[in-house]
Amino acid sequence: MYGLHALMKSMFAGQGLVAAAAAPTPIGGVTPTAPGPNDVFREGGQCSFSWTPDPSGTWKQTDVELMTGDNFNMVFLTTVASFDGTDPTLTTMNFPCPDVEPNSAIYFYQFSSPAAPTALTWTTRFAIADAQGKTTPPENTTQPNGQQIPWGTGKLADPSKAVPEPGYLLPGGASASASASASASTTDSASSTAAGSSSASSSGSASSTTSDSSSSSSDSATTTASASQSSSTGTPSRIVTVIRTASSGQIAPTDGSGSNDSSGNGGSGSNGAFAVRTSWGSAVLALGVTAAVFVVAS
Image (cartoon, rainbow, N blue to C red; front, side, top):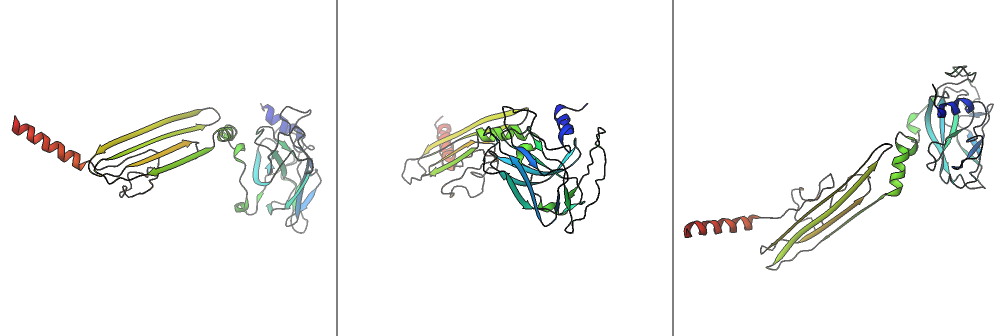
């Protein structure tokens, strides 16, 4: 049994231009108007597509992907354009036609927006011919559900030239994109001071907050570590603060001077954790002497 999304694709893709829906919806949308079912473009020439701007002002960012495959198993080839889908003065765009295999009427465009990742619209299938204008018939004459709509699965002649698919269209990309929009800032700050007087102090503090959200789960954690020491050994004092408010990767705290981190263990943790290294030799020695005096006295 096909889902509603697949049913819509079956009804529209390859049978005329997809108009987002039969009637306006709250999410708005860009409506493709070209190319049509008999349009042919040549490799090395200019490919083009047209649309009606989104009247709701929702599709501020609109992306267009070159697709192939049947109505139920659409195959992404490359992203061909990004534009403001709400701009009333912008309705047509051209770009260099890519080299494809085979040269046939098995290609179509998909219009999408991060504002409504599941509200996709498509054009009909069109042909990309070779440089001489030659094409071959589509490999298949009917869709998987029996509809008489020719189709085939093509590919770029040079896949390395493909522009990646928008992240919000990938599995789990919709909620991940929303999470990144809500919390997409990372701040690192570090300061260090040194005192050579007979009374010196060493302190370190850090706060790390991470958040990650997918389509069905979310994790958050807060880790705080602090250490302080006061001695008469003249140990440099440093304060390192790390604030992490996005799930955009790992953060390693930095030390302004770096002179107290020769082995790399004190301030370069790859997991964003915070570490403070100090020399406790003098304190241990003093403790040992005190213990010895106590034993002799007893």
